[in-house]
Amino acid sequence: MSKSKSIEKETVQNNTSDSVSQITKDNIHKITAKLESQLPVKTQQFSEMYTAYLHTMNNTFDSCITCEKELMDKLGVDKAVLQAFVEFSKSQTDSVLQQMDFYAQWRKYSNDMQLSAIKSWDTFMQTIIDANLKIFK
Image (tube, rainbow, N blue to C red; front, side, top):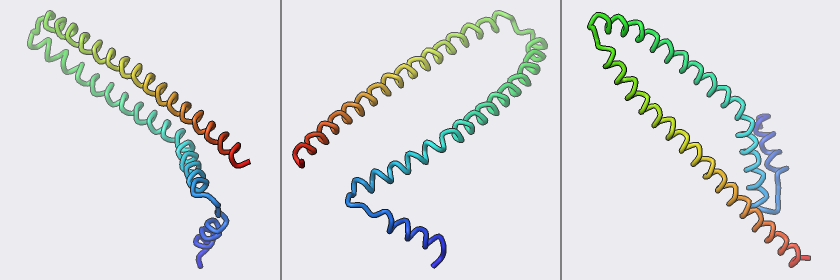
């Protein structure tokens, strides 16, 4: 028998329990601990990706700005056209920013509601545990 199979067998034999719920609880704790341990790495990965994205977008737009200025000057585009685009773009940007605020607010309320439901369930379960303790004493 290989060393890893031996360790696995010992772990299974040492993990005996009188309860399916206890086994499930233990496994959920292992999964949750693994998720929590990965949060710093996932946060770092997101940060690196975001930084690279911003850098690439800035370079792309810097390149476009240079070419666009030359083209606009050569074509003799009226500054009023550019001003109209500024106003249109501002209204679109304001709309997106407002939607982002609405979404953040919705996520907060949704999270608060979920936490409230979990706390209510926890209170209910504590009541059941207390009642069971009184019954089985």
